[in-house]
Length: 287
Ligand SMILES: [Zn+2]
Ligand SMILES: [Zn+2]
Image 1 (tube, rainbow, N blue to C red):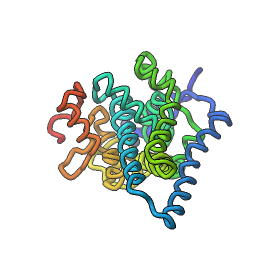
Image 2: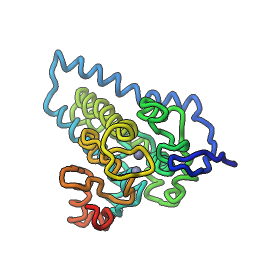
Image 3: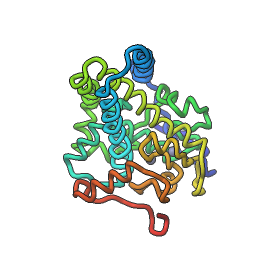
Image 4: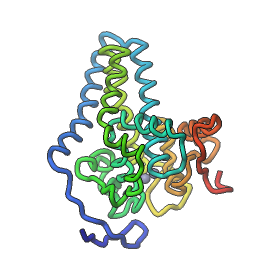
């Protein structure tokens, strides 16, 4: 399939292969994955106002938030997409399974979409630049776009561990609901399942929307990426997004002492106990 030459954010041109927009069944499934956790969150908050929430349910929310959140930040993003760390085989599979529980699509689809973003961030080829609107950048693009793994994540298609998790990702997403249900009953399912999915969804998506619009730009990158402390807090370190666009190969995104990067701290801790074999840091002299 031939592509079109389009202007990039840095003034160059790049070839963008046209790909059919997702069909109605896929759009409906994506819309359901976005809206159902939001609606259930509204119900859970309304229910909590009259009945309160058990400590176990809040614990399941926090535990599952960290598990699926680190699955996205350390597993899907820094390990799978940018190859900035090499994890022991069992941990690699576990991080990918944890990422699937965040219900943000399969690992390979996630990586392909994010690599497409890095190819032309805030240019015409960016699937989720806020130059097309904050709502589009936040979640709207998910309904109208799907990146081509054969073009953007071809190297992952040969990886047996990655493909095994990719083919079964829906089961792991369901496990992310079944586990808190088994432990905490109906209220555990509400808070550790649906409210947690809602919270991780929007924390991740704030990186695409807020972190390309609001915040500081210590590095003069060819895009609109920003460092945003609030997003860094809720997205486990991913809010230091201008740092990330400046040094995408680095597994560590918080570069200054005040830039708290929980995912980077976890990677350093896993390396210390031998579960992460190697990780890339920022270039010498930067941090
Ligand atoms: Zn970005
Ligand atoms: Zn990235």
